[in-house]
Image (cartoon, rainbow, N blue to C red):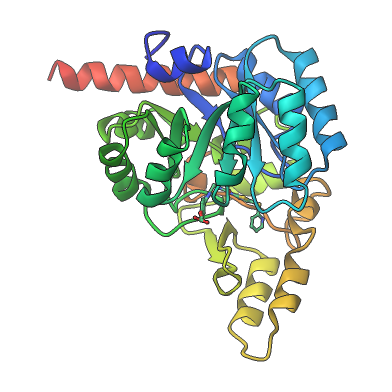
Length: 314
Ligand code: TUI
């Protein structure tokens, strides 16, 4: 699955593996490491202001001469600045998530930025194609962070049938079996977040990595549905407290929002994995080791290729 793959040709990468644009996780160092490994690394713009994002982009340019991208989190209060900086810095590729990117598509395309929209449903995928996205990431609800409602298994083939542009599968993929399955569903690449949480080049706190490695198949939970932005994270004191408050009719949305504020930073940067939010996908139980980005990217592609070859000859 190298070079001749449509995602690889389109993005100028060697392996059709995209690293998720995880807030407080996906910094210039991780993005550059994934890109240097031949995949597509992404910097998470998350809630960064323009100058913070510009600094990360400049750092990534120093660390790699391969293509990398920026993930724009559309709920960010600094989204306008982020779009401006991405255009000014001539970032090659942008992925958009957590909303409808309609407002920004023209500006990004005019600046020569290739746009890939992360979608959780067919309607937005169709809209993304119409708006000029070069591909979509169909992200199932197995993923970590902000989630939709449909599983990867159900979502990917429906998106594949609805659009003409290439589809990248995300949510619940962490090894070659998942990648091979994604190909069978019609996807032409994968995006992984959880698998890269424990990458050696990932700069999150060791406590977070340890918690991912210790997690099993039922250790994640979705909270925040009542706020309109459901988020999947590893179960801990924070999610238990959030759940309790969320089911209490006396809790105001403002109280819940206040509980969530700063929570991801607390876990990812300060290592407070009990009171912080350890966003993570359902596939955490499969992630049992720390590896370099090169091991992860090459390993998953080799495993997927071997599986597909084996079944082709069966
Ligand atoms: O965006 C993500 N994952 C994220 S964003 C994030 S930051 C955050 N933190 C706290 C609360 C909320 C967000 C953490 N993880 N993944 C891509 C994704 N996009 N998943 C689902 C969607 C999505 C949802 C609705 C995309 C479009 C959409 O459209 C709504 C509309 O307006 O049509």
